Image (tube, rainbow, N blue to C red; front, side):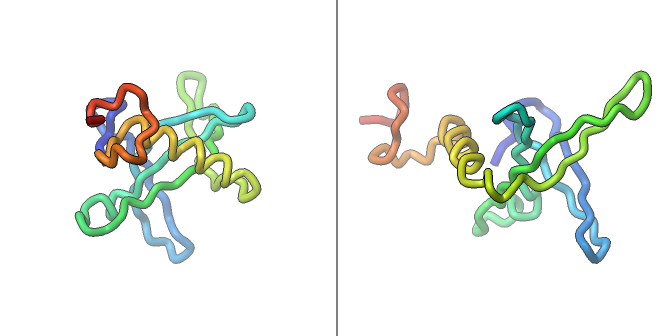
Length: 114
């Protein structure tokens, strides 16, 4: 997947339960029911052309760190909202990345329609 929002990747470093660090790319943000969410891509799955890109939906909280700055905290989205969040993210991805499968495309302005 490509980062379409800016030229530089917005990377976030996470640690798993064993203390291993890994980076994820923040692709975009969206709001749903008053809560901000982020769409993140696993950078390691992007490097393997045969693997599907892993997409994660995380809650975003803004924490004021200093007078001049803020820090974002990413937490897993609530399980009871995952179906509706997944639907929102799938629609956002479909609008951005066309897989040229025009039979299943619901975009009226799709350039690949024949």
